[in-house]
Length: 495
Figure (cartoon, rainbow, N blue to C red):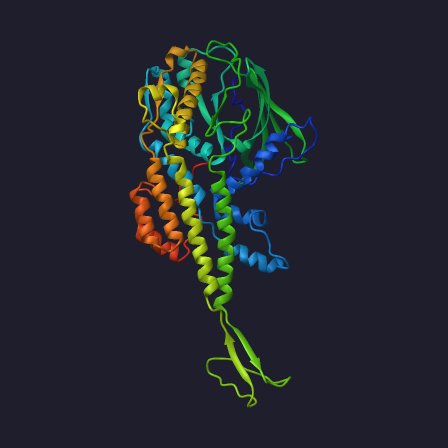
């Protein structure tokens, strides 16, 4: 067999774009059996994925993130759920944080011409390395880690000529793999470090069904040392192997590793196990989702006054309308009972406070912390300090280096063909600036400064982007301006 992907007819990759069915526990020998670690991590990813996907995904999860109230009817809950709209703080923080290091192109020094040529279309989907790398970084930040599968177009067993490679576009390419699509893995320890020896990847592919329709095929790709197997689930739910092959390099020898490289946005606790850096922000965003739902519900109730009457006799008919008058006994009373509005204002204030806290929490990864300075840096400059986001960029540079090293192996080039990739990281906040921002937040919560002054001051300190319009932000806050799903919004993590 040749390299992957196989010679199977190519459908449309829809992995991550549809709601995949729950992975069934059919026993330890079922290829779709999720690992114990995956099950634990997936509970977090359900939350981070829904927060990234937006209002529609949060509504789909329903009571998982928006519990029903005691004695609340299903109809009442469905109405309340339909009025709930997500304030996309988690996604915006991940998008803004990703934008900082990728505000400038990645620079490459010492790379071979062949490797640099691949950068123009690194994933065979038309994405340059800068666009592709930005998406992978976003996924890693949002979910704790992400992967690149350094793949190769299908290659015949017989070693092709250079002309064959040119005509058939035989070349390595990169695939972005979400952490939530790695459903299981096995490893072995070598020299005190864990190395994967088997990895299972969930895939979905839309294939034609009839003249105009299509159906989704659920697959699991099993990566092993030197090769792969591909399994597909049939219409009856059974799994069968439909393809397999070896990882053949340009010289015809087998790649003796699994060409899957993880990017950890935070230090892993085990192989492929992390806790997202912004996990607490995700929980706070869910709290805002719940509080916003309560707020919309109470506003709706307050807008509909309740008619109260007394002193009327049983059987009296009362007609209510703008062109009618009502006659009753002399001691009768009829009036509308309306909400005072105090609870509405309290709810609005609570939402604004949550939004301000989320802004500060999201900015914490930009704060330079002297404790993160390496021994080498201390020798060079004792005043140097790095932020969490800058540390992520350093890890990402190492990650890219690993990806290019495997790519070079596919091409038959040695390690000397892999130079140095540098990502912009001259950004961050000083600890003093962040402390000032925290003090401003406390002043805002105590109503000692206005929301407009607060936003202007944290923007001046770099916690808000230059493109943020403070006046518009104030208007949106006053109108409880949560974010609906927007097709024009950034789609990091969705493709």
